[in-house]
Length: 500
Image (cartoon, rainbow, N blue to C red; front, side, top):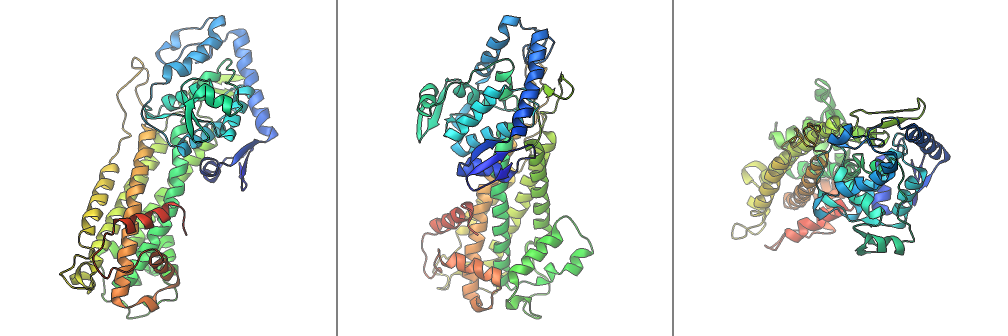
């Protein structure tokens, strides 16, 4: 895919995470290159060959799951495909957001374009047309164990067939009505099509694309918060010295330290003797190491997601060049979820560091600043009770970082005895991002207050100075006790919106 302002062209090259986000969040339209049509048609010819000769193929001429030993009658092949999404629409819970549904649909289209699904050209084009038209199936958020996101995709497929509900133009409607208003026809499902629509991990992959975009933005802001806190604390920047970091070049730490040095360029903190202490607490001194691990985890999760986006995880997979349909386990998401479990734990370490630095900057024994950053003395609360919010967010992040991906109980009469819980893993990541975003917002505001109290607003580096100005343009210095929750939410919302 190649992104444009308002269009994404599906080609034979790997789609990007940015492409999926452009479709999901900015309603970019999808166009198809001829090479993709050729792949879809070549795979479809193999499917039709198998049906014509009644060759055994899972989900095409046999039933699914524990029913793999049941051959379908020739006159039941198409009817079975209509039953597949009906029987698997078992999701529960709140509905997915519109952007999540769009990301899921876009991920399914991207993986179909790899050529291994065997989907009919009509259904492939119908799915694209629905997404381009703004037709959004109502999809419950719970019910997938990550051995293909069967339940969510079944609800999607059902809506495209005219069943269930869908959102169109801001209104939730019966799916048949929404299709009519969008000037779409219900999908005309043929052999393998029902199965092809839902035998993928598209919810997990689509959600991962959204999460990675959010995390990249949050990562950048977390570095700005560290730099501003360093300015306020007058911390020792030898922690960022590349000579020391090169002595043990752990993942990401040298690159992170270089970014932090860049944020401080032009300020007095980089001058000899500017630091108050020879060595600072570990939450300051080890920032390059901890955030370097975070950077490495983001890159690993990004790579795992890109692999899924550019591949056919369909089971069975159609190998058009070989004229074969093969059963396999490529839908298993263990490598993917381990990358995201690692990412969640990396963010938990960063949450702890952010929380500790925020507490330290409020402590006169550590920072040589007024307790709780109040300029009016201890008859005022200042930032004291903010520490409870910080503590709560950090504790919840630690809980969310605990693994959930170990195998759930077997299903399908014991045939499906291993699964990755991929959607739940990515959902945990979303919860961590939300809370870490608040922690970063609080550190930014507390550090700006500390900069004011220290009297070093004219000594800030170029990057840290911009971060300070960003905060002060939106949040006034705390002169007298006031409700601060809205201040924190405002900065967090700005970060979430992609502000730079």
